[in-house]
Length: 212
Image (cartoon, rainbow, N blue to C red):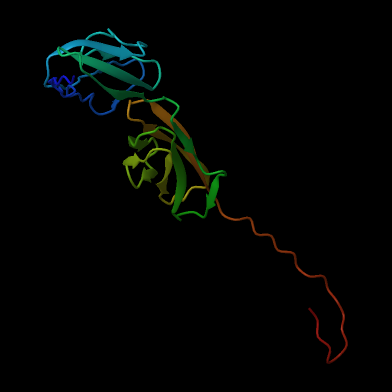
């Protein structure tokens, strides 16, 4: 004998889920995570729980000590699941380093010179920096800079000529994206070069000879 039957299978779609773009915060700051979904959600589960205000709500706040990626799994009222992730980037206060000229630059009185200082960004994001100097004899050719992730920027520091022989120095202050100051020094020595001259000793030569 042969029996024939049928079964209806209803395939339900997975719930929609967007955990959002990565969030950048400063040390000891808090990030607000906001997920997006258009479905009726029964439960939320975040991991890891480090720095989270709650691991079972849709929009927790996060205060991680370092950069971290959070993963979220949602279950809708039909029992279907979906997951996504969001990274909270904590900017390291040591991510900006300044490399001044290796030596004190020397110029003649009233001459001008441009010194090069390298700004390195070891963060995984581009940082917007603000730059200033303390001595009015110096000026930076750019008071702001966008330094790409894991890259460097060559800062030009211009010194205008002075008559007086002396060493002129300025602090160069760079404020990172969190407002943390990073300071280095550029020095210029203004002075006349020391030129010495030694007269040749008397000598005797014969007629038609030459002397050096």
